[in-house]
Length: 116
Length: 111
Image (cartoon, rainbow over all chains, first blue to last red; front, top):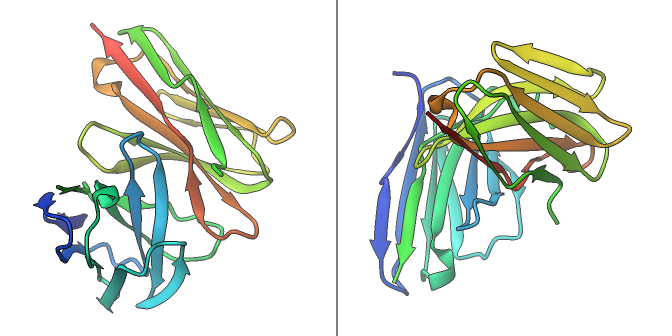
């Protein structure tokens, strides 16, 4: 099936640990994103890559590091996890990055991260 | 600060009724998009309306845009239980080059 898939779906870990979330899209899209959704459902962009190049880097702690080995993959590595990192992280992709977002975003089903 | 804010925050209706959700935003936009999020799932794109458009339809969905009032509405006609979800508006501003989501409206459609 064509889709944006991210793994794992659930991630429970202790403070101070390092973890990674993987994302893959087989839609042939050029642009991929990471969004964070907090407990109030507020969705905030973290990063955006276009053809493996970082184009949006919001004010995110540098403990968060995205990596794009190719344009179909965008992984998120988080170092020294903190309680406040608990959230649902969504990967998304779009056909092209024009700045105008005339191409809608396609989202994965999210990774629920719980830091204890 | 958030660009878009939906109103109401929550809406409960019976199957067959119409549901209207509103989105207000602060700065001028290139386009406005509506997304649906079912519980435990990712967001799904519903409809995109450009700043020079006033109304758009897609099946049972009708979106209007009033740039003078900086607001948009999403109307779902003849709602079904399967429409139960959270609905988000998202806007693209000229200089920001990013899609910013609103706070969402949680819609509950009961039988």
